[in-house]
Image 1 (cartoon, rainbow, N blue to C red):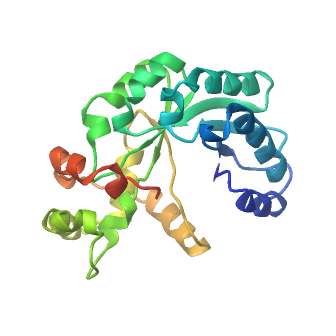
Image 2: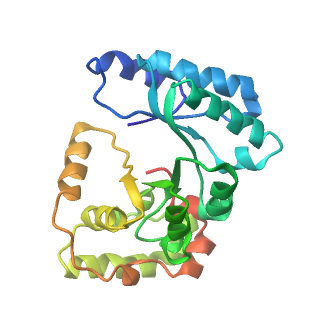
Length: 247
């Protein structure tokens, strides 16, 4: 389970689950603009609000925080929290444009959270996943539903994706011809990558959770994944926020 440092959500979750908690909890830091002291204090506070003595993973909320002047000081704070046993693993969230393999060599994280989805397969085909695997980094795939673009039918696309309507229609048609549900396909692609150790999917209701669990446990479809992506140049032009927003 992933927890954003918004306070309210953490306060609701803490009393709602059994003790000891059955979940492996991942906590995201607040932005470094708040100062490294605030980042550390908020990471500690998150555990208190969640009612946990320790968390599984603490992630820097964005790679840009590590790339800045205080990046090393921030990472030192995370390593100190790990050394004290408050978090079992530390890492960061990044996109392909952030150079995640370079950052991994510099900071030696336990975990990196990356946007990986069927429509934008650049992280796989550029060798980033292989590099991270060689460094012993666990990769958590996020944004696997690509902002719901494969589920949009008969509705206008977001403005930044309107020019790619034909390509998206072609991909949806191929899935329909294969009688494969888009949710099943998107999950199967991410879960089938050997370098990916966990797939993160956001849900807003119990019904959505049941649908995700059912799709994740369905037989892996025999698909040519490479034919179901937007062309690399198209994905890059669309931008990471268009097809890799939190989902």
